[in-house]
Length: 338
Image (tube, rainbow, N blue to C red; front, side, top):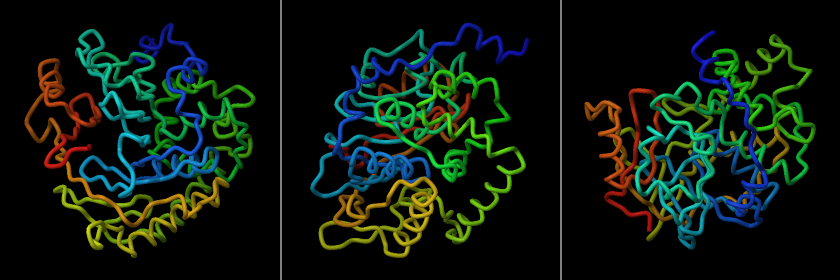
């Protein structure tokens, strides 16, 4: 028996939608304000929630920079595709954030308003990194929201939903773990939107390869040098804001960057059927927040109990265990979230 099969023994639990709605009732409430990660997963989440629950996209956050509508407070927004380590902030993410489940910090309840699949299953990076959630935030939202609202997924949506966060890469690389998580999300149930995505009879391997190739070509037509067409770059490697211009006392996404990402959003919209309503997206009159992003590798630190606890003592805003040997994190400096 392989190591992954050993780790998965007895792990056949399924998501409890009733418990989700009891603990996080806001996830199916209409007319919420939200902040997205500026990549394909965040953009899909924004399109999806604006289409079915009339959520308004008020800003973007990439770990170094946040842009937020001038009339909105972060406390009143839901962060999509990221886990915010603040008790009074609502968020939905899918990264590995727990290092050792047997050594939870006293303030671990800062995640009490965060819907996080690895935390729901009490998975950690210390002994369970191979069990981590292998899909994207949009798949989690489809399962949860789709259990309350009837959502029909067109076959054309399969490509963007396989593309996002490299989902297509993990399907055959980690099949045991993917299948276990699809069971957890109840993807085989008739009314679950994920059933159309992952049990679609139209797409044999060769047909899917051709469809994905076409999707990549359409994405590449939007790309420019150093900027892929499937993400909105709002900061440089050194943390300096990018594609942002000052307009009076506030900021706006530069027109050329806005036009590029809107082309990709319209591509996603056309394939999924989730309308892109420009009135629900904030591109202008934005407040700019600058944060400090770091990672263990660049600091010459190992990922272990001591260093993880030291990180939490600094009260990071967000973080993710990107490999067994590295954690990327964000500290609230020079700016504060609120």
